[in-house]
Image 1 (tube, rainbow, N blue to C red):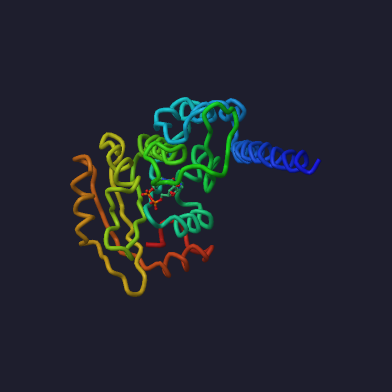
Image 2: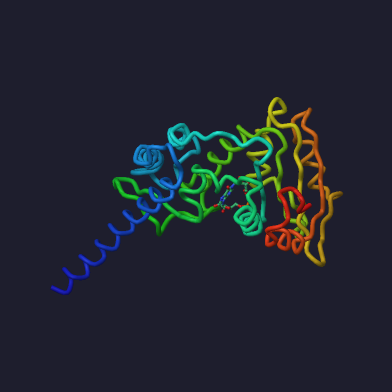
Length: 249
Ligand code: N1C
């Protein structure tokens, strides 16, 4: 009897886990108007369900990207690398910029972990491979694909918040460097404005060697600009409702 109870509880937990991931996804999707969220979920799930979680290439998410198409916000698109918390604190408080996580594409799974398993039709949220465990893992391929889609439609003036407290703010291993910058197209993107976020004892400024690489990577015709901005200044500005968009740096 005890064994049956244990098995039932474990099964219950596993099943609940799957459903709660789906309901989170659907709830978040429904915050956006004009989308068929069940259809989007179906396309998303198809990318990894029943597959080895280390063998999900980024292309597996193509149907999801197609179903969750979105309109670009020219001049307001915000990219980032190693500044996630600060960027989202800023975009939440001030309605100036849009990150990938502020669009349906990124918001449905932001901060979540998920994967499938061979021979199963479920979504698991534990026991999934970590970011660097294998290259084509469920979560990493998702962010690679979604970031590519976001960068593909980038237009007008584009902003990127980079971390000035590390020696390599533009790191070739990052999604920003390896995917997004490579896909900025000069027929749509006019300027790339880098906001290099600095702290008290910052180790980096706009003359940083990695930022030279960033300029080299940019499609000819896209203008580049870099500005060092103290983290405290960004916090102060986003907490002050009087300060208009665009006055923070
Ligand atoms: O590798 P990164 O940063 O340079 O990626 C950031 C870059 C942003 O411009 C986003 O458009 O790529 C996009 N992106 C996300 O939107 C995103 N949301 C959550 C990339 N990664 C994202 N995550 C998680 O952050 C992801 O699971 C991974 O673990 C980090 C990557 O952050 P990073 O190295 O600071």
